[in-house]
Image (cartoon, rainbow, N blue to C red; front, side, top):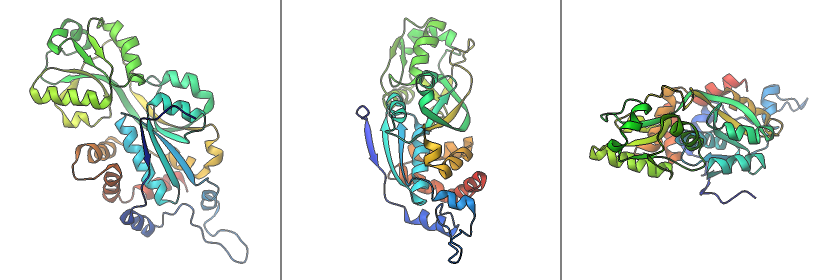
Length: 318
């Protein structure tokens, strides 16, 4: 049994419009025609492999990591429309990785490597399966309002008063929090600032409040994130490289994931999103009042990208 989770979500019923669109494209993973005389499938080994997958999938969604939330809901929609039964749970990343190593989750879509989640790789690397990466320009940042005086993290130490002597952080278990504490603060002499460790929603609320009021603010953030489109902010330069270079966002599965889900393994291995795709998905999910919830935003995104699943399957060779 894993520790208590912050939020639990039971996935919703299939969406009629998207199901119809996918069926029209002939995208059923497990559909294969049988030859009544020979018992062989007409569509060959790749389609037959789909029937080898377990049909229940548990997704661990990282609390506060919006790209992970968005992609997890996207995969929930894809998998449900392909006939899988999906259960998703939202929790702190540390809880997710513990649960993944222990078999309480099957897969998680938001592992930042080689820096942010390096400690989890060291702890759980032998107990999970790295299924590949879907994004390769992820960056940890310290962001400020664009009209504020500091240009670099070196400036921030001498201008702390301009920012209320405060650096606003996110969840205690986040890799960004650890790197800020262990690398950024000592490297740039920011020990005198009040580093508030709270949550991503609390950080975003402070960011919104400060920028709306025209006040200076400094927050821990990361790219990709919809906040860069929503608020007038910019990153502070990091001349010492304390936040690390650009990273990849990986997918981790259980140690036996490839054996349990051979077809899904191929699909995940072929999965990738470019900036335009990811930002449009995040903006529809987090910035728009048009959609009732995350799954409604995913439905709309799939309608705007009608060949996405078809292209994914083609790239995976399934």
